[in-house]
Length: 252
Image (spheres, rainbow, N blue to C red):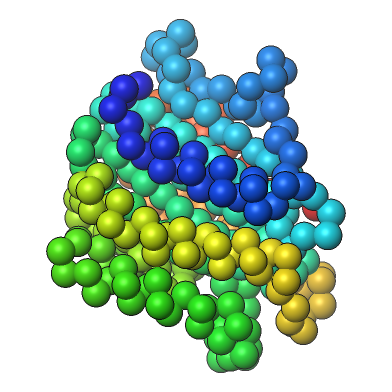
């Protein structure tokens, strides 16, 4: 595990900000009281390969769960962070990813996963996404940064939004730091929505069904086979599929 990780402190800050704004979150721990899953390398069972932490949202929130998944494989330190809205609501999901592969290099992506279609529900997009316009433009118009407006894989981008910010080529820790205020702006907006979003959408059963299909598509192994193959190589396919299942499964 890298001693020079900047990706871990970056995601830990997102976790901390979320817990302050939504104090009702409760962590579901493993048998020993640590992360729900403490990962071990398949070929070296005594080697720490990362973890999966899971929090359940409290009552009265549009949030459902928070997930932090870390995978360590040699020099590569991968962090996935999710804040999920309730499956029976129109609350978007928040997604952040940082893959660090050297002491100073990474790729990253941050976005919301919309819960409705923009053509059928334009007012939903105005309410949920218009407040992201300023941090979005600040991020992509910094010509001293490699930040762009879309991740490198358009198949995955299909299930995100057009407000996606990230890199499709290597960035530095300094460049990630430059765009971090915009990322924190995205997170602050999501956390505000979690306590205040009111929008008349489809009924709860239809929303749950759409959410299940959405996450099945977004987490489909075929969209990013190299990434999931990397997970299976490190921790085994059984544990890797357990990770995917935990990420995709609503708690409420």
